[in-house]
Image (cartoon, rainbow, N blue to C red; front, side, top):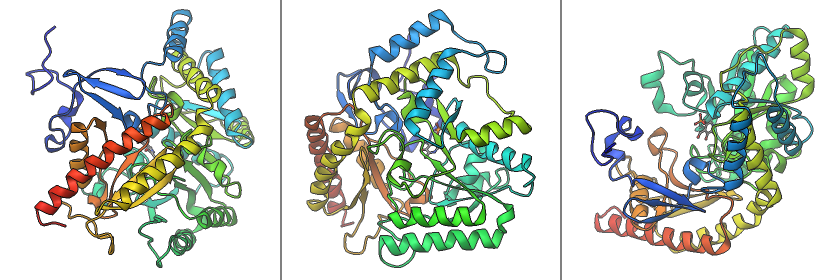
Length: 459
Ligand SMILES: Cc1ncc(COP(=O)(O)O)c(C=O)c1O
């Protein structure tokens, strides 16, 4: 079949035809991938700076993972979790639970991130209901934040702009200011901002009435929504204290951070702030297979099972081929020590990004943990002024990156009012030399954009 990917065909076409045409100019057509690179139909090679969608942690073409999925599919393709049991399901959940540690013995699998977020909240709601706490329905989240694209998760996501279209349909949760380290919502420092956000959480719980509040959900290390924001540590101890005091479940959305920050969960960096439930997705399947998971204590899951059970499911939850793929992904990651190595490799990456910041008029901040980092762009480094919303800095930088062999990402929430950044989260298999190559290309790319801004009189 003759397929034209360059223009709008009469029928069919690629997925991006649904997205804003102003942001999908000259997207490369990828025809193959190898290691941390993808190649287009004109023979150009790109470093996958953002691991596909913060997902492809093992890079392209891992034969062990692909073979495991093939072997499983040949042996047993599918049977439904409501009427059968199978070994790949049990083996995967045991593996995830052992990596997650005490308090996360039970693992409910799903087909992706948004579905897992919804599952976590619905699980908590059903548990609270079964225990007689029937008023508990309200969810508190951060502004800005991201929790998914389904109608329920849009309501929990911290994006002021989505209410215009979705307001009449989605149920919007309650938002408190995120403890942004570069733009603290209270005071002048990251710590003052974090303390202020924690105070705002408690005030919101009191305002709503603790009996009505089911959960507080947050990304412990941010993804695209905050540009890898790392809250000041005081935020973690404070929110754990506040949630326990008021009987509110603490949920960590670790859909992006799992496997990337130098430990399996970002939660492991904060031993005095153990969440009640964790949601994960991307890293588990490393883009070889769609998967998400809710991690919860055996005590809660088993108690609910004996009361009413948690009765929601989706067709592809825990499907055998996905389970086999995720087992192979996690085995690769642990046997090759990729999760722990993300710590020291991330420090190397941070040094290179700080060097870019120190030599660029428009990079105002470098932040993140492990191989989940970001560069924030500013018009003025002194005042931290953001570029005007018409100058979509991260998207222009993404386009220039294509010319420099980089696959970057841009997806601005809140019209860029909380800032504009590029996430730097390459596959965990990246080497020190490849980090240098990537950083050199990033430096050139950002310099081209800064020159454009200077010529346009913006800087
Ligand atoms: C923090 C966070 N939560 C939830 C989601 C939704 O995941 P999915 O796109 O797999 O539905 C994402 C996706 O990027 C995410 O970054």
